[in-house]
Image (cartoon, rainbow, N blue to C red):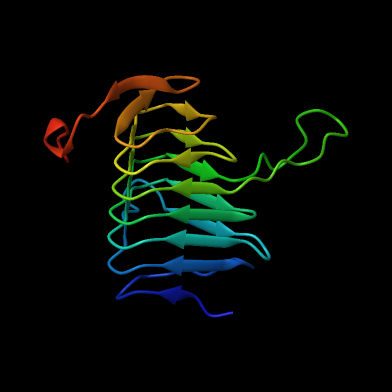
Length: 159
């Protein structure tokens, strides 16, 4: 299956599923490569103007959807599966991950299966996100908890 994408991406295609990229994605593999993986029958969608830094990984076993103007820090990870049984006999968990527009996921953060992150949200460095994140807020920690809510666009600084 051919990849579907906007203008000028570079794709090293070693996946059985579908990876759909919007226009102008940037993958910065300075320290080490960025990994995009979509298992057989899975879909990974990334909107326009994404910036994904060194060592970051996104794994779709079912479905991962990311909006426009997305930023992902080095060594951060997004996955929609736990990849193995946590409790013997419980099975492998798979749950779609949805990330809105203008979201920033900082260095080393982990986004786990079933999470939805609202538009304009920021995930702090090293955070482990196990539940949904509202729009226009900052979450941080393990597990990630609400740190701050933005009143309006002028209340936040875009870096």
